[in-house]
Image 1 (tube, rainbow, N blue to C red):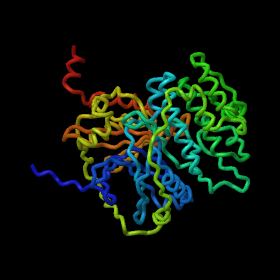
Image 2 (image 1 turned 90 degrees about the vertical axis):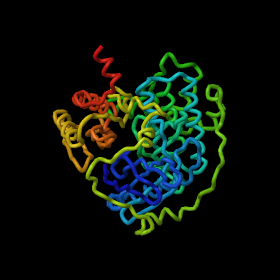
Image 3 (image 1 turned 180 degrees about the vertical axis):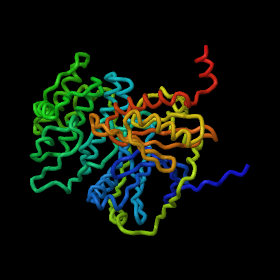
Image 4 (image 1 turned 135 degrees about the horizontal axis):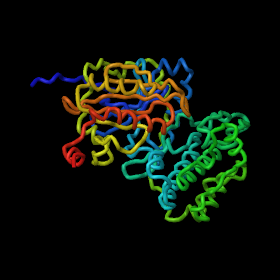
Length: 441
């Protein structure tokens, strides 16, 4: 049988695969270094969009920030490249999902487990601060886990370098997610990036131990009042040591709030603490950052129109699974997260029709291009309109995998949508023979 040769998309030495994340200004794709076989995350930015929305300085800042940070608990930036129309940031590919998923699926953590993540977080944040870098949007969604369960801080898109501090020595941009943001950031009187990050670390520790937020209110003004007054209650199952440390961190006065150095001396924090040992590299050369915004023929991207769904190979299937356990790739009842998959029987065009039929009654507008679909909920939810991206991959001639990921909106609303979608596609969901036997018994 003569199978048509598929054209692979490449960026320099990287072979580009499926989309693993999508935002307003950037798309993140799974890619593989063709020389070493190493999987990476390829962040693709559209130059025209970046310039049109005056985002160039923020993107430069993100790249500069990542180049300064070489820490085992921070997502690594390997290199930056550009074509005439795009900027490519090659990042470490982290396989263990978000810390947020762990809390959603399993609820609150035991103190020993929460302490280990918190120790890694504070050490990494303190290291960032020592290099003049402040994250400013620390929250569980920006904390990833690697294959060994170690924490990796990601998304420095809202970070600020020390060079951008005003004459009064303070930062002035109000940003971040309200529930995790320090009171001084909300009142916009200027703030110190280090103490603001420390507050966010305290909120994260509380969420790990309690399973819910310390400051929460559907009314934004009420939420701001609670944060500004440091008004929260510790759940009764917390140990005295954990309560004391959280109270010292969630101090609404940044002048008296504990520093990372003081946290390192805390008795609760010190239990079983082993600081990471790693080799620091000085990579302060920023020449390539300006270069990526200039027209360059050095790196070319081969663009093509997909006439059939991209075939997915064993290497990519394994990279999607947890270790070598492939069960949740073919199980519609898999754990919920901001990205999930469902495997369907039938032809690709038939599957597209089925998804469209299922999505429209749920209040979604559907846009189709090649074998990708964008679904937008007309009705705004808790965090605006829910946008969902889907992409179809061919596993075998009559077996396709649909990747469903949240582009915008509330993660819990996405969970509900996915459940409804998978229920309405029940007739075409692939199940193996063992599963069929169990159902018929």
